[in-house]
Image 1 (cartoon, rainbow, N blue to C red):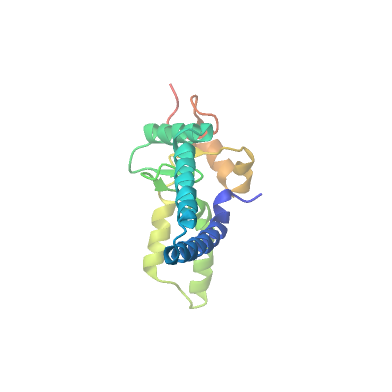
Image 2 (image 1 turned 120 degrees about the vertical axis):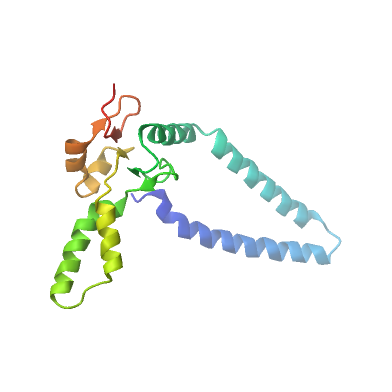
Length: 177
């Protein structure tokens, strides 16, 4: 099953369609004396806001995500990269996601292209080497099967990181005391 964030484009299409529908409904009600369509639209917007607030602050799943994000912040410095799925990744730490584990393959392909005289921008290559030089200081996996889905992750966890004593599925460079 793909991650939920991959369905975001579908939600964008639905939201645009809904916005056009409600705009039309609002305009139709503005031309008549009947205000019930406006009440309907206003009620739906208010319900959507209440639901958003509920999921933001009261949903139990969110509490865990916030705890993971806070723990990642505690065990890493601001200049260190972190690998965690989107709901758990603290946005104030550099991401060491997909690109970090695939950069060696990209660099290998670039070297082959350069041998054929089809080299890429040296700026791009230097940025890739810079990413490779900054491996993640912490990795969080909610589901243990995620470890085998990312090439090289199991080997990296086994040789460079230790499991955190506080949060299950969190691995960091620092040995927990």
